[in-house]
Image (cartoon, rainbow, N blue to C red; front, top):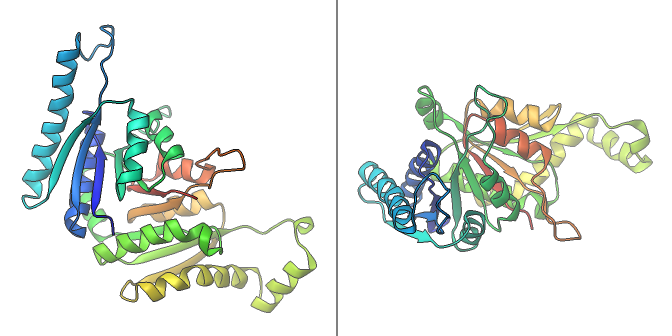
Length: 292
């Protein structure tokens, strides 16, 4: 489990919600909490402040408010703060290399369709070398649901190397909470021309397409079941689009865990359409495990 959780603060309610979530998670795991704010001097046309001194004071106040908030809720928690003299994306990406988990605030979709996950968070997610959790401001009815909810993880692949980051993250979170873990695999009926004779044989041996998908899910999850024998695991396959299936499960989840595409041959990393969808629409915190 990570020894340090890092929160990126920017003075918004969403980032304070991220701090609340990370503080509870750090307390749960016996980890330290690090609050950071990326700050570099901006020209006077920035409306937040008119000079470098005023901007720096505002940045320091952001950290002080966050520290007061989390220490009041968790008096025994080890909390550190730091101003990062760098562009926010570069600074936060660097934090993913030195922290066990980076937690950021997320707006998601609100009442307006244009209310999106922030561009900084999306850039960080693309470049992160470690897991990132996005948390949005909770609704009034969220506290009870989050306390009782499951950890849900999407398992799109049976290859252990491909799913390892997401399953590591999900099982750690479930073990720390004493929560049930729901491993979900969405599948669709492939077009006839996409299937080879060998594929038909595999499906026939498994007893049909649905049974084949269930077998693939069980094969993917088995190593983690053995490593975490105390975690209650439910394996679920469902016919349908992955984003739709995961969003349906997220309604009662305390955490949704998804993966990120590995870098392609040109070193370009993509978040993927399914991860984009759950980041924008899931009501619970979303953890994105970094690909290789």
